[in-house]
Image 1 (spheres, rainbow, N blue to C red):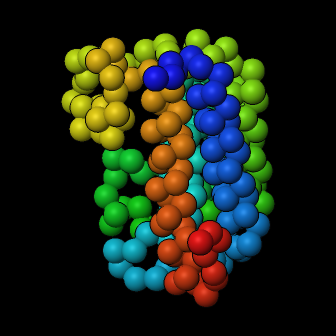
Image 2: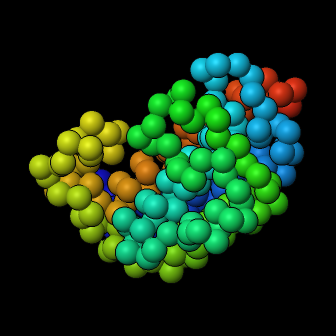
Length: 192
């Protein structure tokens, strides 16, 4: 059995994060504002929601894992011009169906900044940091029902669990939504 603090585990995480980031880069550079803001029908979230929700949650999760404040702030909101300045985790589909990106180039810049910061952190992290517990048992109600709570070991949710669940697996989930939605706007998927 390999410890979380093993260099092999960190190497695997770094490679998977780089692959995930490349999918998001490919997605945003092969769509335009009309694609990401497309309204399909009631009950179907636009690509803009999936893009911003994941990235803004990634940004906030990074703070929980490292203590470094999120990049997103009032200046970024003024530049990106999100219709709803909220990642929407605690909102309904009916509320978030109106999410749109105002300045797509600024959004892409924000995405690249978030990914670059995460990439740099993982390139310099001490492997023992992956074992640090960020949320101990018993979990508060808002955490107890999450996927990361199911993944957590007896010690609680570790930094590795956070990167795996809150950033990597969460990103893959929303990439699946983006790939499906690309078909609704006449674009191909990106993976097979």
